[in-house]
Length: 585
Image (cartoon, rainbow, N blue to C red; front, side, top):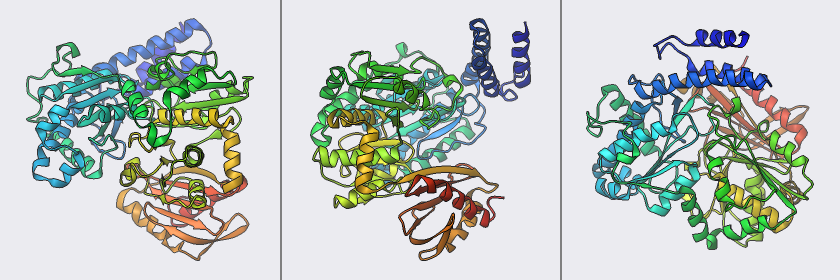
């Protein structure tokens, strides 16, 4: 009775009967999930879960029936559009954004820049080539996808329906099916209250700014007018798949597997042999944390349904609340993988955590955590030196300079653009590896979209080929090319947009030749890179980078020291710089 009363108190606190706008469903869900996680009693767990399910019924109703403009305006960025489920992301807003995308293919006939970015000839070609569509494990993903499918079908667009799938496999499907574009209903690694909408054009990579800017403008216009010629007035956005013509079911993982096999000569990864070698290698154990995300639907098929005792799947069940955690491949979230591996007796251990839409991955061998800052450089060294592939490496400017050191020693070039995977477009097909510090990676001969699965395949191949754990391989790399210790953080500020950019301009006083105190040591700035914020590289090759968030009143900063003990000092110095210009108190 006491629990029922506590449940009702939470519901009364956040939910107003028959009033979606006044109700904060996800705050209620978060508190209910927290209480569910705090008890060990099975009956009590069920009571809390029943309440969570009860609130999700209300969220579902809001997703289906809310036709008011999003609380936060549509804005397409590097990874599409993200917003709160129900209040921002619902079947109405998704249908309007889908119509905005279709509008691009009408505008291309008079706009050559848009036509080039889309990668198709005209609207009819787009219809025939079709759209690959899927969603991650988020609540209501199937409803949101169905809304988009019905708008596509109303405009005679061929549809490849993948259902729940990862970003990387959908990208592979675009390439394998030669589709015109893809839609993925996902907010990636954002918390449970978020929904999202990713759009990739015919190149299967993140859309260029000329497209995302136009989608943003068109979507806002359609939502404001609450009408579009591409959305028939009589349309039923929930018409079931069985009643939709021009729809093909798409096995996105099979397309991914075909793509990897087809391009083995480019990247050197023999997918089938790698998986069989794992199944027959008693010295290797693999632990994968799916964080309840879309990767859980693929893992058995990824390993070709071979289930040795040495394949451990963590958080592989369906749970739209992610167990109450922020579902990102972070140091805290990978702790469970590390704990499991430490208990194993095998000599070779590989652990990975994958975010909900499968575009980010982080590794561990039970002892050493390997972020993409390290793994990207290791993968490049492996493909170049072990697989014998030649070419440059590509990494965002905020990523570790370990890859720079490797490339320099190998007499290869480094492509170092601003943050955002779409920035790698100029070197797709040229760079052996392209990666970003936020745990995204892809390789030559693969998709231009970040993909956890190709990272996982690479890691398995590294461990089996070298008969070394990733931590041991990292030690070899660092002994040869130097030690690099990165970190990142962000702080909320009271400014945003042009005002924030103006304040950050005061950092220009930290120019080449200026001395900066790092702890008790004076370091001289030897180089400044300004392609994305301000990156100040010191005389020992340590660095601080400060940049504004593009969507929030936040400043993000990234640092890299040459020893672990100095990393915290660089973080402190970065905060001191922000305080000096009045952005921190």
